[in-house]
Length: 504
Image 1 (cartoon, rainbow, N blue to C red):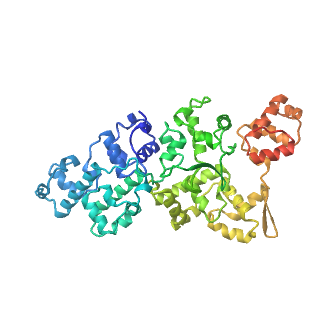
Image 2 (cartoon, rainbow, N blue to C red):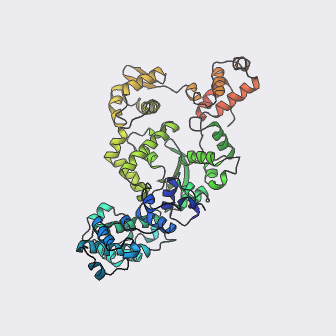
Image 3 (tube, helix red, strand yellow):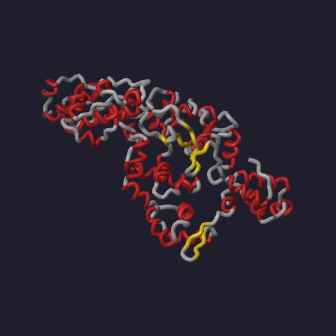
């Protein structure tokens, strides 16, 4: 049975999917230790998966102190099942179990009673219940008292609380803080308020259409789907040779899934049966396209890749115009930075968007990223293209520190001058269009590149045939195939240069 077909929560399925587990039979040898070691998984998900797998609940996997665990172990109690029915009087009769440990264990019992009698929010939406009283959640009375004593009256206010807020509450102990935070995380998950990676959602629900899977993960229904194309949002995009293999580009065009209305109808578990696509190519093609998705509600962006959103909100607004393959590489590095500072699975997209774009430590670390030569060249070129008409060379150099302080700006500018991409005259930078062969070098087929190169040098088809040892028809096919794998604006430039009719 596929994990995606179980009744586990989306957050639990995502955690297992990211760890490489696809089928339930792959989970049969997992322990609670194994679950706890998965990345981005909370205690509620661990408990949920453990219950699904019918794993025993060990005392050392919960919030008991070592002191309490040792005293219970010496008295012969090792699991939650063994201590949950102990009365306070029985606890006081256990040797070397002090008052603090007794209260800790009683609090733990309260926690487990709450978890076993979890709230029911099925079919309810956040907007319907956010103004409701916390009493409607039917929490344990002890927790209700703590929340009321700290003036938490509505579900909306409760769901905005962070762990740091809970620690400041009057009359709350450490185990109760953990219980409350676990409740909040669970509520947010059930109400679909927590962020999920947009490319992960369809793969966690492969039996659903892409559109249905994504809408099910949002607290909104009337949303619009777009592709990100630089800073613009579009319904149709081009996929080029610097992003994908030629065979993948061909499949995308055949299925027309570079059109948003077709992509969102795809059912991932079925697509491999179309046009001979296997599981590996399906995954590769879908991830490429899903990473470009942007979801809007009332003209506001409510979901996109969080690193892409960071670049969208950046003070210097050129990042999203970087070539797609380089931009993807940069977002992977930014993702790694973000994960050091925040668990993205426990916050909404809106919260993360604000936090990440305003957190000085995150911004500082991103400004200090080590980049490859290709990444550095593209970053500086895009920066210059966007700002060279507004600032002179000296000012551009100074301001680039806030883009990246590890890149040798002068060295990269000289590289770009050598490549014919920029000129420096009288202290001013002028950016030039990338030559056609700059893009053609990305073609995976060497014959396509060679045929196109000679055609751009005004060689006739007969001369190309002689140079490459091909028939004229084969030379013509290679030129056409190469052109179709280039960006549409580049194709148009070539069409004007060589007078060749391009078919999209």
